[in-house]
Length: 542
Image: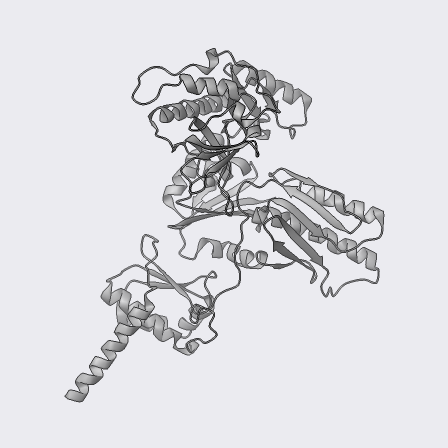
């Protein structure tokens, strides 16, 4: 399977698409000003104890207080709390207590209460485990961990765990022995699947890197004020790469030189022989358009998603769960056997549903209403097929067999809001009112904007993106409108197609790929109208 990672870096947002054999299977969008990402560590303060919920609300600087449940304190909270009491603060030059030299205290009671461990205004080090979703604040844990490519480091633990996806008993024993020989005392380690076959030098190098993250976190906590961010998880671009990277990756394309450097540095660390797969995309055509991602996004998101032979699924989102309905549609090649037809549609729907769960990052409870099947062996075959196609999903999930009503229930780990992209387009001319300017005059509008950019703003080397149909119209013929405008205005501008835009919509980027704001169109139109009236008035006076 050919795997490629495509990174679209825009001034306000970064989009990361994972392609498998050219098919979009994962899409993540991240604001470049995003706060409270999973993995970030904060110096925080207990705001309120809620004995009824056996939880506490903690101030981490978010508009909504974060939620910390008793079970998220972790079994080693007593040792962690004792360490925080001894940790120097402010400008103190006193050395930090050594976790390796501590005597770990007994685990806290699994059935204890939050008031046994926390008090109001107590300062804590907390880590984000779930981003803010809807009206809820972030969810926290005090069981701090640092994630690397091959392992996860957990201070105040003394346990080594190994990924269940490593099947060979001999390899598990080898990894356990290696990690046991290099890890410091009182630091737990989770060995990840990607550690399989790695040498002790590679594991030791990453372990030292993770220990340095822990030391830097403590140093930031010493100087920090409550609440403050003291450890920031790697950017999601690097995080996605860390989690999904495999020797099968053939290309990683990115359209930003700065992000290119970050990715090349990271790939050089984890797989020096693959550093050349990270490439800079230099074309002016939008990167997602070039790799056919924009078209796949528009066809894969939205309420209705079609797949094979006219069949389709309908996806509805609610606060509590996601509901998916499978429909056979008007399948042209359907046979006479209704039972086999139902099985075929359900199997193909399972493929698409597994893709949609990853693509939209849907979490929580998912209920799927498959087409009814009477034969038990067909129902079992569908259940096994769904488990098989979900096997590559990195999010924790659980699948139940079909109920007697033909419903399949799936639970999937949710750590951030589901990705919901609106594929319908609001008319950029009337904004939903139902009346638009004549489309024939749209070229006049573009000419006015180009004139304003070149003559008034003195813009040079900018790119105006328009809908592909509009682009084709502007460039048709030997002496096209596009060529005449460039000769008339003398500007070094370009007009290029973009599949993201609606029919009568345009977007302008300067030489540094920053968007030029031309939204004050009413003011521009008024000034243009005023100039026209003044010219007419002067002619009359003459």
